[in-house]
Amino acid sequence: MWSIAIYYTVLLVTVAVAAKRGGPLERWAAYTALIASILTSVLAPFPTWTDIETNIFIIDVLVLLSFWFIALKTQRFWPYWITGWQLISIFAHIQKMMFSEILARPYSLLSIYISYPILLLILYAAGSTRRKGDVAI
Image 1 (cartoon, rainbow, N blue to C red):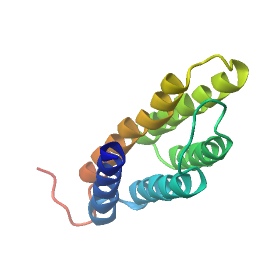
Image 2: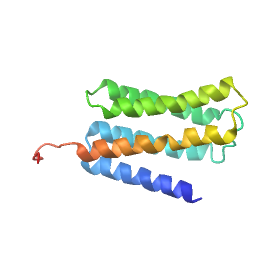
Image 3: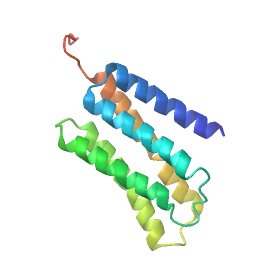
């Protein structure tokens, strides 16, 4: 599946940039995304999306809590954005719980593709973080 390869490529680039350029919070967010992605692949390797994906929902709630904690530790904008995007993912699960007639495809697309803006924001934040000794241009 090429979509999984693309996702993991974007994820690994994000983690690499966060590890090299980012501060502790950017690394924390990138590692949270990495761990959540691996756990999702292991615990729900072939989701059907016809009913609520409980394992993915639990992982998404834990990710939300992690991102929320990051947002509480800084005044920068990006943690609030990733927390908000993750909350949208949580709402997709809650809607599926409430309305079983939601089709599998929209449920899966919202749950899967919400990760891209999150990763891109972490990538942006890590790339724009100034470390000690960096000179502003």
